[in-house]
Length: 219
Image: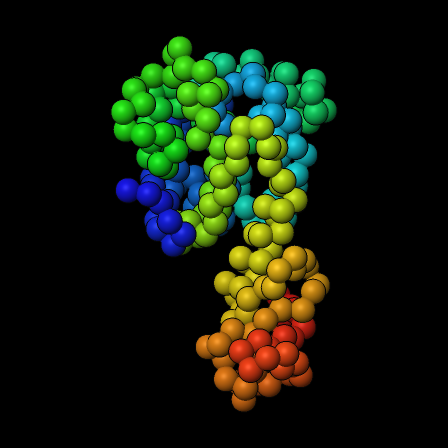
């Protein structure tokens, strides 16, 4: 069954570059990003893992843990980490899941059930669909899914921007408009009456009867 936003993120236990991880326990009561890769020692993915390492403090500042997965064993990941540092200047300190039996890739609907049960002999093209990002909330529900083609590197600044929106809208009855970024005006949701909007947010602008904008709430 395909995963959708607000589904519970499938739990699993797997070996990583930081030992065995039980995914839901590892997430704890915070946020997490799981981002996947079709194979080790591939050019686009090498730049992505290094870029994510560079952004790691920004994710931590938002209370978000990061974990990568590649359809190869942990021993291969450890060797790959040296190439990632050479290419990007960043050391990977977050865990990388080894998925040599394709279990996690199938669990997250990135590979079909008939894909087999071993990463051995598989090419990046065989695993082309293992290119997804999942943002998972403290309730263990999936908040965002992004899937990229192999030839398009992911924009991790956009993932951070989306997390800022998701976390903000989880705390307040607001939504964020197109191209929103921290500090921009937000949209008051339809669940808030005009009277309550004044109590909650103070002044607001009615652009259309169904589109009311106000300053970004703090905290």
